[in-house]
Length: 315
Ligand code: AMP
Ligand code: MG
Image 1 (cartoon, rainbow, N blue to C red):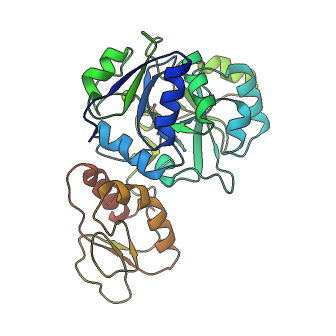
Image 2: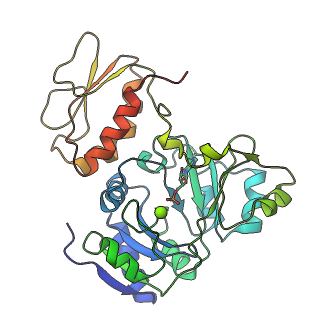
């Protein structure tokens, strides 16, 4: 654990220090025009796992990757005419675009929760932009508060909630309105995935089309929360001590297995490896047995995901 959380001032030195910490895989809270975000290097699975650990999130849902510019976003996602129009109109700003990932993107599958799409945004806050430019990479950043608590709009709020659990807070005074970014899906017909800081009507005007609206219930349901959204094709059996029949074993800790989430029983490492492991074992076409995973800390979120993978299928 991190004993003290550094308080960094949002000047060039503080921003450079924050960027260094992020590059080391540590967590830094930083201001955006919506709320303070809890940033971790989106290419570093263990850093992303630490975000879940620090927030005490009980489940993995996809996170937004924050980048400094349109060009930076284009390194990770397949750009489109619609993305271009929305980015021209609303970036930097509180609009998040969900687009297909590009081959060789390098983003941790814990950021996308195993999806083949990525939510990206260029925030408008000058300190956030300076930090992202200094990191020169995608930074995953949900709100910097313990899971289930109110989003922070000052560095003091961040300290109160996460002090001692993250490396640093980059303090630039109170931020914004506390309204989240609007999320637009551009992987099929354009759709509103979450209302937020940019009004629906403005987006529709720019795209010259109506956005597909989800039913009230869906809006609250992050894709990661859908019961069998990331379910492998093969049956999944949890808490397996030994393999049965044709099963492949996804291990945890010192066990003989086909693939190990963490030989050293590190929950952070296991979380970082989880989605990639499920994908690759799924490709074997064999049923998947999974070792018991302790149910504390990050283990709770891992087990939540595994229970969904093992749940009866929707279709
Ligand atoms: P937060 O970072 O807490 O503002 O929440 C991120 C939101 O973005 C969640 O509601 C996610 O479901 C949504 N999101 C992130 N990535 C994706 C994606 N690839 N597809 C659809 N929604 C996404
Ligand atoms: Mg939040």
